[in-house]
Structures are given as C-alpha cells and as structure tokens.
Image (cartoon, rainbow, N blue to C red; front, side, top):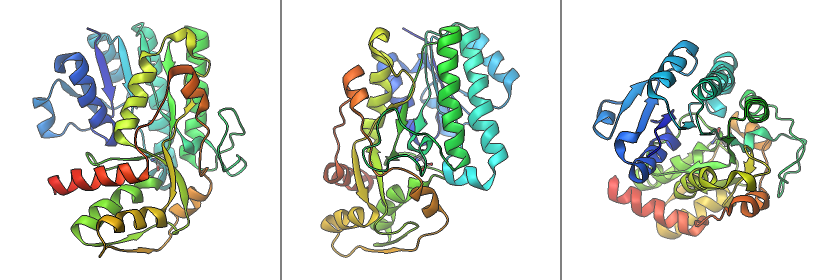
Length: 313
Ligand code: AKB
C-alpha cells in the first residue's frame, strides 16, 4: 500500500478526500495534516500539525513519513486572500514550493495540487473557457494559482516530479463548510434554507459560475491520480466542471423542495471577484486524457444536499 500525506486535510475538500483515501488505502496509510488538528480527528487515523509555510517542518515531516503520494490542499481561498494578500502568497505560493521541494527530495511517486477557475481573469472568454487560453487573473488568489500551475510544470519538467492537478470550479459540499471563498454562497444557502427558511446571497441573482458537487470533486482528484502518466498532456491544470447556474437559479431549485424558502440578493465586494471569473468551462481535455465524467447536475446535487443536510441538522 502507498503511504499518503494530505495537507489541509481538515478543510472543505481535505476532510472528505482524506476519508475517501482512507477507505481505499486503509486509515493508517493516510496521514492527515493541518495547521490545527481538530480533537476528534485522531480517532479516524494518523493526524499531525503541519504549517506548510514552515519549510523546515515540511522537510522534517516528509523525511520521517516518506510519502509515496502527496495531496497538497492547504490554501487560503479567494475572499480571505484579498483581505491579506501577503499571507495568501506565503501560504498559496511559498507553501506550495515547500511541499514540491519536500516531495521531490523524498522522491514521492506522485503529487496532487488543485488550481481553480480563479486562474482565469476578465480577459479570458467567459463561456466554455478553453483548456489553453488567456490567463490574466486580477485577484491575488488567482495570480497565486497561475504561479502554482507554472511551478508545478517546472517541477515536472526539471525534476520529473509527477505532479497533477485540476482547475476546480466552486465546490458544493455537505461535510466541512468552505472558509472564505467567493463561491461559499452556493453552500451557505442550503444550511440557511433548512435552518432559517431564508438567505441573503452576497452575489447578484444573475451571477453565473461553474460548480461541482463534492463526490465529483473527490472523484476528479482520485481518477486523475490513477491515470496512466503517458496519456496526460496537460498534467497539472485540467479544466473540470459539472454544472453552471446563476445564484437565482439555485434559489429556485431549492424552492422546488422548500416552497417557503425566501432568497434575497445583496452583492458585496465578492461580486467583483465572481465577475472576473468564467461562467462555464470546456473540460474536454480532462474527458479525453483521463476519462473525466461528472455525475451530479443542479437538480441531482440539490436533492442530495438537502437530503444529507436534513438528516444531519
Ligand atoms: C473560492 O471561491 O475561492 C474557491 C475557488 C473557486 O477556487 N471556491
């Protein structure tokens, strides 16, 4: 069995990815790391504190654990990154470099690092964004993603580190909530609809963004990591998407299940970030090179989110 390290393992994607990897590879083979380890975490498998901005700690942890596979998810999301660009750069770029270096130094077999739709900018075509296109983001989060994509390419070409990745759209999930992203409204709305029957979205009703539901998000990461290396041309920046909808359409879909739900729209500074991102993606390269195929569209995701959260809340 391969030994696996996950960074950012207690975040929105990390927590569900870690569970999926533990089911597949056994709990003891997957070490969950994060800046803080929640108390309950260690009962599910090995868990350690790891701050990816601390290069010496990253080196020490990797030398001691000798991972074969690394999933590097520790990051600041777009909205919080704008509040503190310096620290966002430290975590998202310097942190990535520390992990790439450590993975190279222990000769890890493979590494996953997610890019984002934030790597695109206002000059990118907004509809069906091609795999290879203009990348001129205007947010610090997006600039860090472009730098990260190029850095991963460099480690692949220069050191042969097999680092792979996708450009995630907004991720909708019922497990750990997202923290500080622009697409968080698409998750918050479900909690608010069930708990309070009303929600005020921080984007306009006609704000359209590409999205993906967590089971597809996890599937994208694990499927790409299992793909034969020789079939990958784009290696670490594949467009992936599952659905595109406006905030108003999402509210209407929820209303079909909860007729008394009331949604208002009061755009704040996050609207400008959303306006700089594409509305839909062309993910044909991922489909062709490693068989990407999402399972959830808007109606299926909404039904599953409401059922899962209703049972838990
Ligand atoms: C965010 O909103 O910051 C993230 C992303 C699209 O990368 N969900």
